[in-house]
Image (tube, rainbow, N blue to C red; front, side, top):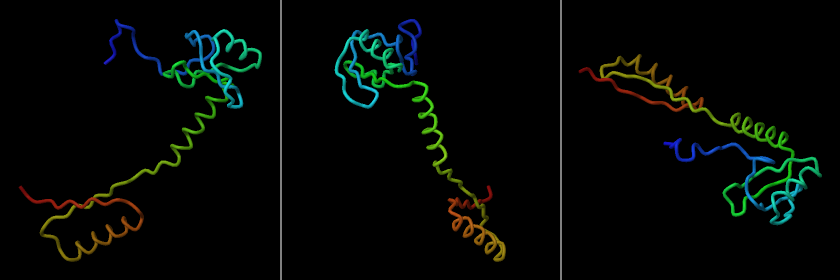
Length: 133
């Protein structure tokens, strides 16, 4: 539960450029090379010179890790990656077959055939025996 009076909610958005409010950051270049620990003003100047954004990638580190990158491209690639992972997600379906203790032999064979077909299709099957009362 978030106490709005004592600081408010913690933002989950990625901070970029002027929204980064720390005196110094560990800077990573656009190609992944370590630049080192620099003042935030110098990091912002380097970002403007390279026509890139300064993106905070690890805010909980001491000092926070920032990378020079195109933020629009970063967001687009993250959305593509999320969409791809959602596409590869398997959706499990549980089929249910209900039986009663006094079932005719033919009805039992029919339901058994349905269960076998579900299992061959790769679905999970839940068999429920219903008693009266």
